[in-house]
Picture 1 (cartoon, helix red, strand yellow):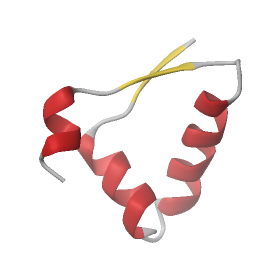
Picture 2 (spheres, one colour; picture 1 turned 45 degrees about the horizontal axis):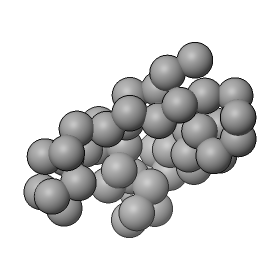
Picture 3 (cartoon, one colour; picture 1 turned 90 degrees about the vertical axis):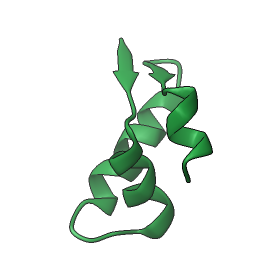
Length: 48
């Protein structure tokens, strides 16, 4: 499974923005396991 992580999800994860932080954490946990592959745009990580 491929999971696309956009800028908003990155911000939710890094800033622990409620009520979205729990879902963002779950996505990152899923992609750190071997069940999914995380995809992000390069510009999304440089804009932070």
